[in-house]
Amino acid sequence: WQGLFLGLTVLIAFIIGTFWFKLKKQIKRNKQQSADLQLMNKDLMVLGQKKDQMHSILGHDLRGPLQNIIYLNNEFINSSLNEKLYKKMLKDITEKTQNTADMIDGLLLWANTFLSAGLKFTNCNAADALNQVIEQLRFKIEKKNLELILKLEDVVLSTDLQTFQIVFRNLLSNAIKFTPANKRVEVTAEVNG
Image (cartoon, rainbow, N blue to C red; front, side):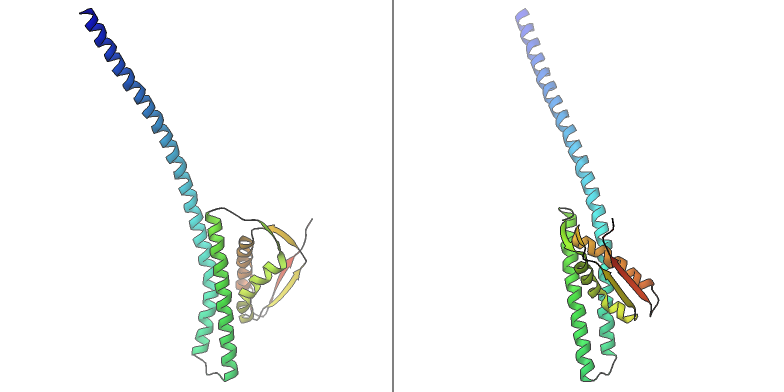
């Protein structure tokens, strides 16, 4: 009986040891999975915040240009125009629509970069970047009969072009919005320091 008892004891010890080893391994795997899930949850929260920020920016930046096109279309519909004014208004609508399409392309490119790889820094001429935005907002400037004064030195920036233009578009839109009609908006770009 001693041999049988010893054999059963060894077998039970082996089974308990195997079970214990597998249990520890499973606990370690569960801890790793828990850590992975926490990291993925954190990444999802950051992505959700980026998505919310992106929606806010896209909504703000798309509303204005589309309102310009709607305004021009309403003026077009409600006016009796001679052929010269008719062609001019169609040209304006086409130009504003193209500017809006270009801006949407830029915003979508920025949104894709923003959500995936982050900012993409390149060297760009500040005056060129600012003038592109000014052209997108030209209709609003003219509608309020604002004098736009540009003091743009030859400044080269190392920046994410889309983000830079979004920030400037928001600043200029607010300047136009809050400046009384027939007044002046001044845009200055200079090397400082």
